[in-house]
Image (cartoon, rainbow, N blue to C red; front, top):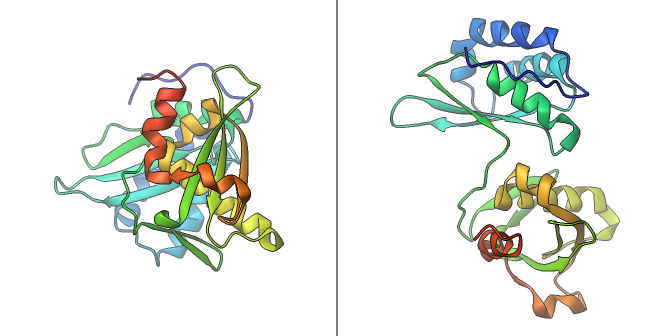
Length: 211
């Protein structure tokens, strides 16, 4: 086991940490073989994680050439649960079979990458952005333009926008360094200054002084 993370988050149930990893190891083979049709084990895994912190969620990566598989522990975009992610990661069992990862990471995607939510599917090439000043120190405001965006189904389209930001910048940076976020259709008057979302990571890093 890794050294335990001792500063507990407000939403964390510390007693459930050991129970979760015992459950994970007991179901290791079934978890390792999951695919998009593995609804039952997904449901059981979600229930087990939410006993630790109700905001926690997960992602599985593909099986890699070395035979290992990624398991991402996510706070679901909730800053209040970041310490729960750290606590779960720090108590994870050492395993050559699994690569445990804290937070959803940046993805190097090409323009035909697609992201869906509900009945909507959006290509990365149809998403653009503008960076803005933000009131918070060390934060950057972002306007995201999504082709086809509709205020009629705002909840669905906004969720797609947040997912694209997590995929592009990573969950940690979105919560720690992104301030105000707005979503618009590409017909917006502000779109004339927009840049392809593929340029966002490097532009964002320069803006927060990372490079």
